Image 1 (spheres, rainbow, N blue to C red):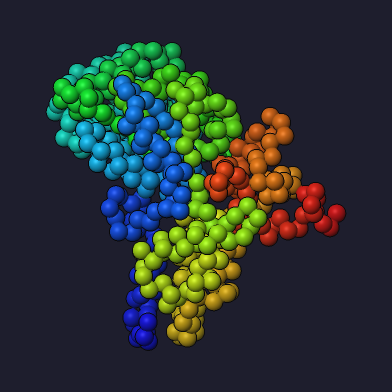
Image 2: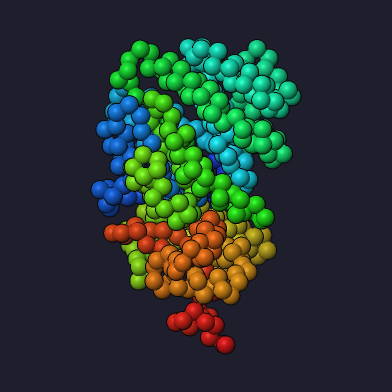
Length: 454
């Protein structure tokens, strides 16, 4: 690009930063010109296409699971799945974001999960203009049931619209940990009744959408449950409750006449072996990180090109500020995680903006110091890492496997997956490795995982 004025340079710098933050970093809808095909090199292994075929082939009702790490593009891909199914004809797809209805850092039980799901569906029905077609009696029965079981709903006014009131319960469950705990405690002895009331409402909603056509499929995509994560003293309780919900309560997650896709956290797979069988037999679909590197650590040119294209679609003048080598370095450091990649690119731009303020506009592009500062900031958020964890992480790095020697290692592996300390890839077959930002930390260990200065 030809030389530009100082004002234009500063404006473009801010524009680039804005193109990958906030609303511009949210999931993309089908047809968005910024969308990039992640698995364009190997569409036969595309889990979204597999999910679509399973739903299209299924009769009556079905259940599928989709997993992947937070921030690697699953929500965008669920929107692609929605578009594929709707384009196939005679299908209605409801996509709900459970992050708006579930407190993701607290244990989740069947009772409060079903209430959150009903709240999400009630809001979705209202937005689809289907609420008038649904018999309000089913939601009213849920409210009557809650009052009969002495669930605290008195502070939520119905105001003549049970759909709005039910949505308020979902919001309260997402924001108020003490309210959530009281709901859980009260409903533990009344789950059969709640399950029946929920199934009645869902069946009525599906019937209204079908409009008398039993061949019309209704699909429910339940997004963001992969964000269920352990924090502090509640960590193990969150992990255990997630296993209990998807394994112990599996039969209650199959919803009448609905084809459902639940997103699940990666740590659920090793903690609940054979979970797919309990939930209907369909294999768990894994949305991998972008393949920016191979097992031997070498760059994957195809994956790096995808990462550059993701930036190009959002801001085509990126080469004003970054060289291709610099952008590739950030892509490699991110491990193919789109969220981390955007963050690293933004931090480099902020470093450039700061340098321009200090040096009166003399800095014209991101330099190595700015790049490294962004990388160190990301690395520091994973630290400190206990010595025993470093040894375990080094084993994973060397073997490219979970390195789960016995069930006693399961809590450690869960923490690694939950904190994104390790990542999964799909170059031919699934494999795991440590987040690349930590590789320098592991360099202080010998081949046996012991510190070199011991």
